[in-house]
Amino acid sequence: MPIEAIVPTQKPQSLEAWVKLLDGVRLPVPQASYDHVRATMADSRRSLRDIAEAMQNSPALVLSVIREANHHSHASLAEPAESLEIAINRLGLKRTEELLLRLPAVETSEIPMALRQLQLISQHAAQQANGLFAGRLARLWQEIHWGSLLFLSPLWPLAVTHPKLLEEWELRVVHKGEPACAVENELFGVRLLNICQTVAELWRLPAWVSHGYRLLLEEKRSLVGVLHIARDNEHRLRQQHKLDDDPALRRWLVQPANTVLLANGIALAAQQGWESPHMTRWQYLTSLYLQMPLQELQQQVHQQAAQSARNHAAPGLWHPAEALLWPWDSRKLHRGLLPAPPPSAESLTVWRKYCAELLVEPSRFNNAMHLTTYARDALLACGMQRVMMLMTDKAMTNLRVHQIGGLPPEAANLSLLISQSTVLQRLLAKPAQIRLTPANNAQFSALIPGNLRALFKGDHVLLRSLGSNGRVVMLVVADQGGGPFSEISVQAFGKTAQCIERALTSFTNRSA
Image 1 (cartoon, rainbow, N blue to C red):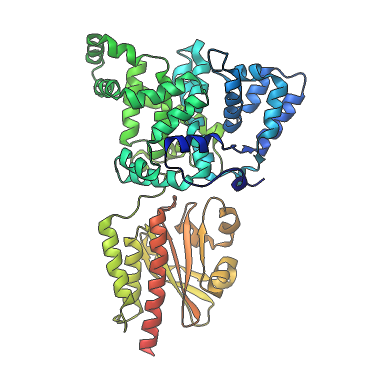
Image 2: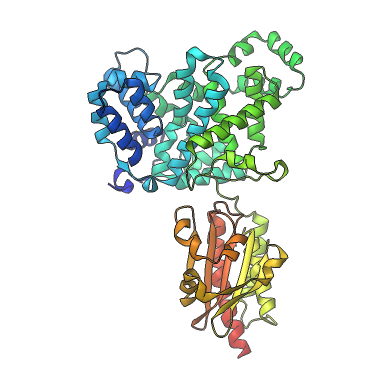
C-alpha cells in the first residue's frame, strides 16, 4: 500500500488536532527488517532477546511494539514498559505477530526521506547514550538506550504527514534564527515541544522521554543555571564549588533521566555542525554531567558518531560522522534534513535588480557576454553557490563554457561533446530541467559527463536548458555546495531561467 494512502494530509491547527493526527499514523517498516523479524519469530529456537535484537534495526517497529504494550488496555500496569524486551513479554508472541501483520511493510526507497533521516538521528542519539552513559550507569542501560532512541519518535509521524513544515521550521529557526515560539505558532498553531510531550504521554513512552520534554518546557531556569556553570569548563574545581553551593541544582543535574536529553541534544546539534553553538552547549552540559574534561568528551562523542555511522548510515541520508573526515578548519554545515539557508533580503533585492535588467526591452546588452554576466550574477544572488553557463555551437555538437561562478578558473575551459551523454541530448532536445537528488542520482549521474560531474560534487544539482526562438541555446548548471537546496532559491532559479530566456530572445531579435 502506498504511503500516501495510510496518512491524512490536512494540516491541524490545535494541540488536540495534532495529537489526534499523529496518533493515527501507521509508520512504515522497511520490508527487509519486517521479513527478518518474521523469520526470527517463526524460529522456535529464538528467545525474546533474539526477537528484540532483530527488531532494533527498525525504529518504527520498536515504537509500534512499545506503544502497543503500553496501550490503554494495559493501564492496570503501573509503569510503562521501559524496554523492547519487556514490551514483547507483555504482549506475548501471538499478539506481537498480530501487530506486525497490521503494519505497512514497504521497500526502504518508498519510506519518506524526512522520516528516515529523523530515525537515523534517533539511532545516532541511542549510540551516543550507550557510549557515554550506559557503561557508567550499567543497571539503567535499558532506560538509557530505549529512551534515547524514542525521544524524537513523536515527530516521526509528522515527518510522514507534513515534512515541508519541518523543513520550513528548520530554515527559519535554525538558519535564520527566528524565535521558535513565533515560528511554531505560525506553522503549527502550537509549540512543537507541547505536541511532543502530549504525544509521548498518550503513547505512554518510557518515562525518561517525558522527563526530557518536561525539562525543556518547565525547568528552563535550572537548565540555564547548569549551563552557566558548565561553560567554566577550564576551571573544574571552581565548577565543583558552584555545584556544592547549590545542592538542589546539583541534584537536578545528576538525574539519570537527563542522559536521554543530553544524547539527543548532541545528535541533533551534530546535524547542524560539529562546531555549531548548539553542539558547544550540549557538550558543555554533558562534560559537566560526566565530570569529564571537554576535550576528552569531544573525543568520545566523535568515536560514538563514527560507530553510529558504521551501524546505521544509509545511501541518501546525511550522517554527521562524515564531516569528521574533513579537515578541521574546513568542515561545513552539511544539512541532512536541513536545506541550505535561504538568500538574505539584501541578496534578493540584488537578484530582482538583475532580473529587471534582463527583462528590459529592447535589450540593452552590448553582446552575449554582457548578457550572460548579468544572468550569472542573478543566479548567484538568488543563493546558488556554484554556477556554470554553457552555450551550444551552431552545429549543436558541442557545449562550451560561457560563464562560471564559484568554480575554479580552469572550469572555464570545459567543452562537452553532446553525443556522448544521453542526459545532455535530452536537455538539448527541448528546454527542460533535471534536479539531481539522492533518490535519482544513480539514474542520472552515470549519464552526465564525468568532467562536469567532478565540478559539481554532491547529491543535489540543478541542470536546466534554455531556449530562444524555438531552439535550445544554453545549459545552466547550479548547486548550493552539493547539499540540499533552499526551496526559495530553487524557485528563484526557475524564475531567473525564465528571465534569461526572454533576455536571450530579445537580444537575438534586436541583433537580427
